[in-house]
Length: 383
Image (cartoon, rainbow, N blue to C red; front, side):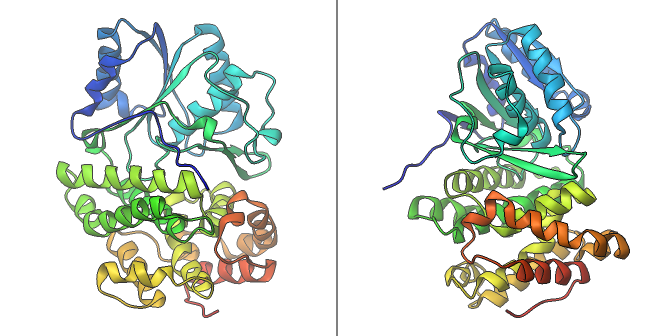
Protein backbone atom coordinates (compact mmCIF):
# COMPACT_ATOMS: atom_id res chain seq x y z
CA UNK A 1 0.00 0.00 0.00
CA UNK A 2 1.24 3.47 -0.84
CA UNK A 3 -0.06 6.99 -1.48
CA UNK A 4 0.03 9.58 -4.24
CA UNK A 5 0.74 13.19 -3.27
CA UNK A 6 0.40 16.26 -5.51
CA UNK A 7 -0.63 19.89 -4.86
CA UNK A 8 -4.21 20.53 -3.79
CA UNK A 9 -4.80 22.59 -6.94
CA UNK A 10 -3.02 22.50 -10.31
CA UNK A 11 -4.02 25.08 -12.91
CA UNK A 12 -2.59 24.33 -16.34
CA UNK A 13 -2.88 25.64 -19.86
CA UNK A 14 -2.07 28.85 -21.71
CA UNK A 15 -3.26 31.85 -19.70
CA UNK A 16 -3.75 29.92 -16.46
CA UNK A 17 -1.77 32.52 -14.46
CA UNK A 18 -5.01 34.46 -13.99
CA UNK A 19 -6.16 31.81 -11.51
CA UNK A 20 -4.15 33.76 -8.92
CA UNK A 21 -7.27 35.91 -8.69
CA UNK A 22 -8.94 33.09 -6.76
CA UNK A 23 -6.41 32.98 -3.91
CA UNK A 24 -7.44 33.91 -0.38
CA UNK A 25 -5.03 35.80 1.85
CA UNK A 26 -3.73 39.20 2.88
CA UNK A 27 0.02 39.35 2.15
CA UNK A 28 2.30 37.53 -0.27
CA UNK A 29 6.05 37.52 -0.68
CA UNK A 30 7.09 36.65 -4.23
CA UNK A 31 10.53 35.05 -4.59
CA UNK A 32 12.24 35.51 -7.97
CA UNK A 33 15.67 34.98 -9.50
CA UNK A 34 17.15 37.60 -11.80
CA UNK A 35 15.27 40.19 -13.81
CA UNK A 36 13.72 38.03 -16.52
CA UNK A 37 10.27 37.91 -14.89
CA UNK A 38 10.46 41.67 -14.48
CA UNK A 39 11.46 42.29 -18.08
CA UNK A 40 8.89 39.99 -19.64
CA UNK A 41 6.05 41.36 -17.50
CA UNK A 42 5.27 38.14 -15.62
CA UNK A 43 6.05 39.64 -12.21
CA UNK A 44 3.79 42.62 -12.88
CA UNK A 45 0.96 40.33 -14.04
CA UNK A 46 1.40 38.19 -10.92
CA UNK A 47 1.21 41.20 -8.61
CA UNK A 48 -1.80 42.59 -10.46
CA UNK A 49 -3.71 39.32 -10.21
CA UNK A 50 -2.92 39.11 -6.50
CA UNK A 51 -4.06 42.70 -6.04
CA UNK A 52 -7.39 41.83 -7.66
CA UNK A 53 -7.85 39.37 -4.79
CA UNK A 54 -6.99 42.05 -2.23
CA UNK A 55 -3.56 40.53 -1.55
CA UNK A 56 -0.64 42.90 -1.02
CA UNK A 57 2.73 41.68 -2.26
CA UNK A 58 6.44 42.20 -1.65
CA UNK A 59 9.29 40.83 -3.76
CA UNK A 60 12.51 39.10 -2.74
CA UNK A 61 14.80 39.02 -5.78
CA UNK A 62 18.28 37.97 -6.70
CA UNK A 63 18.12 34.22 -6.13
CA UNK A 64 21.13 32.81 -7.92
CA UNK A 65 21.45 29.62 -9.95
CA UNK A 66 22.04 26.74 -7.53
CA UNK A 67 20.64 28.78 -4.61
CA UNK A 68 22.87 28.97 -1.57
CA UNK A 69 21.99 28.58 2.08
CA UNK A 70 23.08 32.20 2.55
CA UNK A 71 20.40 33.39 0.13
CA UNK A 72 17.82 31.19 1.82
CA UNK A 73 18.55 32.73 5.21
CA UNK A 74 18.32 36.26 3.78
CA UNK A 75 14.94 35.44 2.28
CA UNK A 76 13.70 33.98 5.55
CA UNK A 77 14.59 37.25 7.26
CA UNK A 78 12.42 39.15 4.76
CA UNK A 79 9.57 36.70 5.39
CA UNK A 80 9.84 37.35 9.12
CA UNK A 81 9.68 41.09 8.50
CA UNK A 82 6.76 40.92 6.04
CA UNK A 83 4.78 38.14 7.78
CA UNK A 84 3.15 36.74 4.60
CA UNK A 85 0.37 34.19 4.66
CA UNK A 86 1.15 33.30 1.02
CA UNK A 87 4.59 32.53 -0.39
CA UNK A 88 4.95 32.57 -4.17
CA UNK A 89 7.90 30.97 -5.91
CA UNK A 90 7.99 32.55 -9.38
CA UNK A 91 10.46 31.76 -12.15
CA UNK A 92 12.95 28.98 -12.67
CA UNK A 93 13.78 26.06 -10.42
CA UNK A 94 16.27 28.07 -8.35
CA UNK A 95 13.70 30.67 -7.32
CA UNK A 96 11.08 28.08 -6.40
CA UNK A 97 13.53 25.78 -4.60
CA UNK A 98 14.93 28.72 -2.64
CA UNK A 99 11.41 29.88 -1.75
CA UNK A 100 10.57 26.42 -0.38
CA UNK A 101 13.65 26.45 1.85
CA UNK A 102 12.95 30.04 2.95
CA UNK A 103 9.44 28.86 3.86
CA UNK A 104 10.94 26.19 6.14
CA UNK A 105 13.16 28.72 7.92
CA UNK A 106 10.24 31.16 8.19
CA UNK A 107 8.15 28.55 9.98
CA UNK A 108 11.08 27.02 11.89
CA UNK A 109 13.85 29.64 12.31
CA UNK A 110 15.99 27.25 14.35
CA UNK A 111 16.34 24.85 11.39
CA UNK A 112 19.81 23.68 10.31
CA UNK A 113 20.61 22.58 6.76
CA UNK A 114 22.59 19.56 7.97
CA UNK A 115 19.46 18.28 9.71
CA UNK A 116 17.00 19.15 6.95
CA UNK A 117 18.82 17.01 4.40
CA UNK A 118 17.94 13.86 6.33
CA UNK A 119 15.02 12.17 4.54
CA UNK A 120 11.64 13.49 5.67
CA UNK A 121 13.14 15.68 8.42
CA UNK A 122 10.97 18.72 7.66
CA UNK A 123 8.41 19.38 10.39
CA UNK A 124 4.70 20.01 9.63
CA UNK A 125 4.34 23.16 7.53
CA UNK A 126 1.53 25.69 6.82
CA UNK A 127 1.52 27.10 10.33
CA UNK A 128 2.16 30.59 8.92
CA UNK A 129 1.74 30.43 5.14
CA UNK A 130 0.72 28.38 2.13
CA UNK A 131 2.95 27.95 -0.92
CA UNK A 132 2.16 28.80 -4.55
CA UNK A 133 4.59 27.69 -7.29
CA UNK A 134 4.63 29.31 -10.73
CA UNK A 135 7.41 27.97 -12.98
CA UNK A 136 8.70 29.91 -15.97
CA UNK A 137 10.96 27.09 -17.15
CA UNK A 138 9.93 23.59 -18.25
CA UNK A 139 12.17 21.09 -16.56
CA UNK A 140 12.43 20.62 -12.84
CA UNK A 141 8.81 20.00 -11.93
CA UNK A 142 9.55 21.71 -8.63
CA UNK A 143 6.07 23.26 -8.74
CA UNK A 144 4.71 19.82 -7.98
CA UNK A 145 7.37 18.16 -5.83
CA UNK A 146 8.40 17.86 -2.22
CA UNK A 147 12.00 18.64 -3.10
CA UNK A 148 14.27 21.65 -2.69
CA UNK A 149 17.96 21.56 -3.65
CA UNK A 150 20.19 24.00 -1.78
CA UNK A 151 23.93 24.47 -2.26
CA UNK A 152 26.55 24.75 0.46
CA UNK A 153 29.20 26.69 -1.43
CA UNK A 154 31.87 26.20 1.22
CA UNK A 155 31.61 22.44 0.80
CA UNK A 156 30.81 22.57 -2.92
CA UNK A 157 27.85 20.23 -2.44
CA UNK A 158 24.17 20.34 -3.35
CA UNK A 159 21.82 19.14 -0.63
CA UNK A 160 18.36 17.89 -1.59
CA UNK A 161 15.76 18.58 1.12
CA UNK A 162 13.17 15.87 0.64
CA UNK A 163 9.72 16.01 2.24
CA UNK A 164 6.11 15.89 1.12
CA UNK A 165 5.62 18.85 3.47
CA UNK A 166 7.30 20.95 0.75
CA UNK A 167 4.75 20.02 -1.92
CA UNK A 168 3.16 23.33 -3.00
CA UNK A 169 -0.48 23.97 -2.21
CA UNK A 170 -1.12 25.53 -5.63
CA UNK A 171 0.77 25.01 -8.89
CA UNK A 172 0.20 27.15 -11.98
CA UNK A 173 1.54 25.59 -15.20
CA UNK A 174 1.18 28.27 -17.87
CA UNK A 175 3.23 27.76 -21.03
CA UNK A 176 3.01 31.45 -21.93
CA UNK A 177 5.49 32.18 -19.16
CA UNK A 178 8.17 30.16 -20.97
CA UNK A 179 8.13 31.98 -24.31
CA UNK A 180 11.14 34.17 -23.49
CA UNK A 181 13.40 31.28 -22.39
CA UNK A 182 16.72 31.27 -24.31
CA UNK A 183 17.44 28.20 -26.42
CA UNK A 184 20.14 26.82 -24.10
CA UNK A 185 17.85 27.12 -21.06
CA UNK A 186 15.00 25.51 -23.00
CA UNK A 187 17.30 22.61 -23.94
CA UNK A 188 18.78 22.05 -20.50
CA UNK A 189 15.48 22.26 -18.66
CA UNK A 190 13.74 20.04 -21.20
CA UNK A 191 16.39 17.36 -20.78
CA UNK A 192 16.01 17.71 -17.03
CA UNK A 193 12.31 16.90 -17.43
CA UNK A 194 13.27 13.86 -19.50
CA UNK A 195 15.62 12.63 -16.79
CA UNK A 196 12.85 12.96 -14.20
CA UNK A 197 10.46 10.89 -16.25
CA UNK A 198 13.06 8.22 -16.99
CA UNK A 199 14.32 7.90 -13.42
CA UNK A 200 10.81 7.85 -11.97
CA UNK A 201 9.80 5.13 -14.43
CA UNK A 202 12.63 2.82 -13.35
CA UNK A 203 12.59 3.71 -9.63
CA UNK A 204 12.75 0.71 -7.33
CA UNK A 205 9.44 1.83 -5.76
CA UNK A 206 7.69 2.70 -9.05
CA UNK A 207 3.98 1.92 -9.40
CA UNK A 208 1.36 2.10 -12.15
CA UNK A 209 0.08 5.55 -11.13
CA UNK A 210 3.48 7.14 -11.51
CA UNK A 211 4.50 4.96 -14.46
CA UNK A 212 1.68 6.43 -16.55
CA UNK A 213 2.69 10.00 -15.76
CA UNK A 214 6.39 9.32 -16.26
CA UNK A 215 5.90 7.55 -19.58
CA UNK A 216 3.54 10.24 -20.82
CA UNK A 217 6.03 12.97 -19.94
CA UNK A 218 8.86 11.17 -21.74
CA UNK A 219 6.75 10.87 -24.87
CA UNK A 220 5.95 14.61 -24.79
CA UNK A 221 9.63 15.55 -24.41
CA UNK A 222 10.72 13.45 -27.37
CA UNK A 223 7.94 14.92 -29.50
CA UNK A 224 8.36 18.59 -28.52
CA UNK A 225 11.82 19.48 -27.19
CA UNK A 226 13.55 20.00 -30.53
CA UNK A 227 10.58 22.06 -31.71
CA UNK A 228 10.68 24.50 -28.79
CA UNK A 229 14.46 24.88 -29.11
CA UNK A 230 14.10 25.76 -32.78
CA UNK A 231 10.73 27.57 -32.58
CA UNK A 232 10.66 29.48 -29.27
CA UNK A 233 7.36 31.21 -30.09
CA UNK A 234 5.49 27.94 -30.63
CA UNK A 235 3.18 28.20 -27.62
CA UNK A 236 1.50 24.85 -28.27
CA UNK A 237 4.86 23.09 -27.99
CA UNK A 238 5.80 25.30 -25.02
CA UNK A 239 2.69 24.17 -23.16
CA UNK A 240 3.39 20.54 -24.05
CA UNK A 241 6.89 20.82 -22.53
CA UNK A 242 5.50 22.61 -19.47
CA UNK A 243 2.97 19.80 -19.04
CA UNK A 244 5.72 17.20 -19.53
CA UNK A 245 7.77 18.82 -16.79
CA UNK A 246 4.80 18.88 -14.43
CA UNK A 247 3.80 15.28 -15.17
CA UNK A 248 7.35 14.05 -14.61
CA UNK A 249 7.38 16.02 -11.37
CA UNK A 250 4.19 14.31 -10.21
CA UNK A 251 5.82 10.96 -10.85
CA UNK A 252 9.19 11.52 -9.24
CA UNK A 253 7.92 13.31 -6.16
CA UNK A 254 6.11 10.08 -5.32
CA UNK A 255 8.72 7.49 -6.34
CA UNK A 256 11.85 9.67 -6.30
CA UNK A 257 14.91 9.54 -8.53
CA UNK A 258 18.13 7.58 -9.05
CA UNK A 259 21.85 7.90 -9.60
CA UNK A 260 21.59 10.27 -12.57
CA UNK A 261 20.53 12.86 -10.04
CA UNK A 262 22.76 11.62 -7.25
CA UNK A 263 25.74 12.10 -9.56
CA UNK A 264 24.51 15.29 -11.21
CA UNK A 265 24.03 17.00 -7.84
CA UNK A 266 27.77 16.64 -7.26
CA UNK A 267 29.02 17.94 -10.61
CA UNK A 268 26.59 20.83 -10.33
CA UNK A 269 27.75 21.78 -6.87
CA UNK A 270 31.45 21.34 -7.66
CA UNK A 271 31.79 22.45 -11.28
CA UNK A 272 28.58 24.48 -11.73
CA UNK A 273 27.39 22.34 -14.64
CA UNK A 274 23.73 23.25 -15.37
CA UNK A 275 21.57 20.56 -13.84
CA UNK A 276 19.78 19.51 -17.02
CA UNK A 277 23.04 19.40 -18.95
CA UNK A 278 24.66 17.23 -16.29
CA UNK A 279 21.67 14.88 -16.25
CA UNK A 280 21.69 14.59 -20.04
CA UNK A 281 25.40 13.73 -20.14
CA UNK A 282 25.04 11.10 -17.41
CA UNK A 283 21.75 9.53 -18.50
CA UNK A 284 22.83 7.27 -21.39
CA UNK A 285 25.55 5.50 -19.40
CA UNK A 286 23.31 5.20 -16.33
CA UNK A 287 20.68 3.60 -18.58
CA UNK A 288 23.30 1.08 -19.73
CA UNK A 289 24.31 0.38 -16.11
CA UNK A 290 20.75 0.04 -14.77
CA UNK A 291 19.53 -2.06 -17.68
CA UNK A 292 21.15 -5.10 -16.07
CA UNK A 293 18.63 -4.80 -13.23
CA UNK A 294 15.40 -3.79 -14.99
CA UNK A 295 13.62 -4.41 -18.29
CA UNK A 296 11.69 -1.14 -18.14
CA UNK A 297 14.05 0.73 -20.48
CA UNK A 298 12.92 -1.53 -23.31
CA UNK A 299 9.37 -0.28 -22.69
CA UNK A 300 10.61 3.29 -23.05
CA UNK A 301 12.54 2.37 -26.19
CA UNK A 302 9.24 1.29 -27.77
CA UNK A 303 8.02 4.91 -27.62
CA UNK A 304 10.31 5.68 -30.55
CA UNK A 305 10.03 2.33 -32.27
CA UNK A 306 13.14 0.80 -30.70
CA UNK A 307 13.44 -2.45 -28.77
CA UNK A 308 16.49 -2.40 -26.48
CA UNK A 309 17.83 -0.38 -23.56
CA UNK A 310 20.98 0.43 -25.51
CA UNK A 311 18.88 1.83 -28.37
CA UNK A 312 16.98 3.95 -25.85
CA UNK A 313 20.27 5.24 -24.45
CA UNK A 314 21.24 6.23 -27.99
CA UNK A 315 17.88 7.97 -28.50
CA UNK A 316 18.61 10.07 -25.42
CA UNK A 317 22.08 10.90 -26.77
CA UNK A 318 20.60 11.88 -30.13
CA UNK A 319 17.98 14.13 -28.53
CA UNK A 320 20.68 15.76 -26.42
CA UNK A 321 22.72 16.47 -29.55
CA UNK A 322 19.72 17.83 -31.48
CA UNK A 323 19.05 20.22 -28.59
CA UNK A 324 22.64 21.48 -28.78
CA UNK A 325 23.78 20.21 -25.37
CA UNK A 326 27.35 19.01 -24.69
CA UNK A 327 27.96 15.29 -25.07
CA UNK A 328 30.60 14.94 -22.33
CA UNK A 329 31.85 16.72 -19.23
CA UNK A 330 35.17 17.35 -20.99
CA UNK A 331 33.31 18.97 -23.88
CA UNK A 332 31.42 21.09 -21.38
CA UNK A 333 34.77 22.50 -20.28
CA UNK A 334 35.81 20.85 -17.01
CA UNK A 335 39.61 20.88 -16.66
CA UNK A 336 41.06 17.37 -16.70
CA UNK A 337 43.43 17.86 -13.75
CA UNK A 338 40.68 19.39 -11.64
CA UNK A 339 38.39 16.52 -12.63
CA UNK A 340 40.94 13.91 -11.57
CA UNK A 341 41.52 15.68 -8.26
CA UNK A 342 37.79 15.74 -7.41
CA UNK A 343 36.66 12.41 -8.86
CA UNK A 344 36.87 10.36 -5.66
CA UNK A 345 35.03 12.96 -3.57
CA UNK A 346 32.34 13.27 -6.28
CA UNK A 347 31.90 9.51 -6.19
CA UNK A 348 31.75 9.32 -2.42
CA UNK A 349 29.15 12.10 -2.19
CA UNK A 350 27.04 10.56 -4.98
CA UNK A 351 26.84 7.31 -3.02
CA UNK A 352 25.60 9.24 0.03
CA UNK A 353 22.98 11.18 -1.92
CA UNK A 354 19.39 10.14 -0.98
CA UNK A 355 18.51 9.59 -4.65
CA UNK A 356 20.86 6.59 -4.78
CA UNK A 357 18.48 4.72 -2.47
CA UNK A 358 15.80 4.56 -5.18
CA UNK A 359 17.99 3.49 -8.09
CA UNK A 360 16.99 0.11 -9.58
CA UNK A 361 20.57 -1.14 -9.28
CA UNK A 362 22.63 -0.29 -6.20
CA UNK A 363 26.11 0.77 -7.38
CA UNK A 364 29.51 0.33 -5.78
CA UNK A 365 32.09 3.09 -5.41
CA UNK A 366 34.05 1.76 -8.39
CA UNK A 367 30.95 1.53 -10.59
CA UNK A 368 29.95 5.15 -9.90
CA UNK A 369 33.52 6.22 -10.58
CA UNK A 370 33.55 4.29 -13.85
CA UNK A 371 30.30 5.96 -14.99
CA UNK A 372 31.66 9.39 -14.06
CA UNK A 373 34.87 8.83 -16.01
CA UNK A 374 33.08 7.55 -19.11
CA UNK A 375 30.77 10.58 -19.02
CA UNK A 376 33.77 12.86 -18.68
CA UNK A 377 35.41 11.26 -21.69
CA UNK A 378 32.19 10.96 -23.70
CA UNK A 379 32.40 7.21 -24.15
CA UNK A 380 29.72 4.52 -23.92
CA UNK A 381 30.36 1.79 -21.39
CA UNK A 382 29.21 -1.81 -21.14
CA UNK A 383 28.32 -3.20 -17.75
